[in-house]
Image (cartoon, protein in one colour):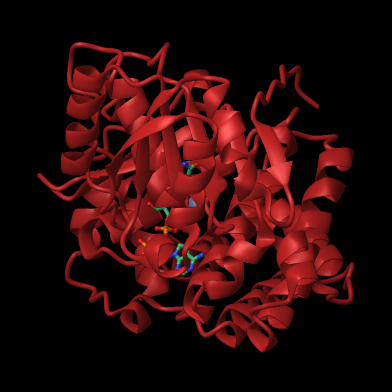
Length: 389
Ligand code: NZQ
Ligand code: ZN
């Protein structure tokens, strides 16, 4: 196990009806806030009205900025930054999923600097400060409610890029599983896939002797595998959402990568797909991950066989660890299909014609490799995408 520091400062307020606490939580930071949300779901569900009522009761004034799209766009971030600078807000409150939260984080970083916040997403300079961020989460998936990351798409060049900083851990996140009852089955499936991906990115490591976090990651994966089918049958199953939602936060709040180094190539590759084709992040991952696994399997058959046996209940064949590993990948693909997710690029509506372009963008023209478990250059990324086709 490697040396590590772990400090996740996000306060989690979890359970039924907890969105009523948002006024008091927000007021602890500011009485003037930016209220940020997405398309229509928070209006249709009545959540936005409840949030406003709670803010009003706590004496918090707000200005609304809605309209965040999945794969959140830089242009709206710029609008939010302008508003924050003009109005001097003391908190950005995100009511929604990963896209709204990531947009709020970008606004919060941009509001305290005098250059374009996109610089941070290009790796120019490290963000050291941001306005405080609060969250009312409506979809367990991205884990952004307790992560130090934000992923934004610049419409110019269809570039989807991540930035991270300790400054953008949300100060508080309100998680009420009841808010997930209105999620369409496709979004639940995408959420399950993203959570699984955050766990697998961490699981496939070259760091030896990480047995404790292996077990934590396996338990979190098994939770998603067990709860997602229940939610397919009954989208209003509070207990299943509660397990799923908390697992989604733990999967990505950096606890599970303590002492180990994750891979993250599949995320980098997927960001090229959703940047160019505007597909849902989880749907893209359902296609990329099995292909990545087939490409890198031989790198550490013991680890893959362990994963197959412990997570997918494959009988471990000690004389043929590759067969065990491949059966694990097959069971994972069957799980994706059972959730209604495509497992090929063509199933996503993505052709082979732009594979080289995506590989080129992903590796900055072959100037950098992606992944840590196995480093992939441009040819490696293209090989994964061809396996996914
Ligand atoms: O816009 P509305 O109308 O709210 O609809 C949303 C959206 O269409 C809908 N939705 C959300 N909650 C709902 C609901 N519909 C009905 N009832 C509800 N309760 O779901 C759709 C998807 O929302 P979105 O926020 O895009 O989903 P998700 O949470 O999966 O976020 C995806 C984004 O997060 C990034 C992804 O790349 C992607 O851009 N990620 C962020 C990370 C981070 N910051 O740490 C890590 C992740 O790996 C990921 O890359
Ligand atoms: Zn993800």
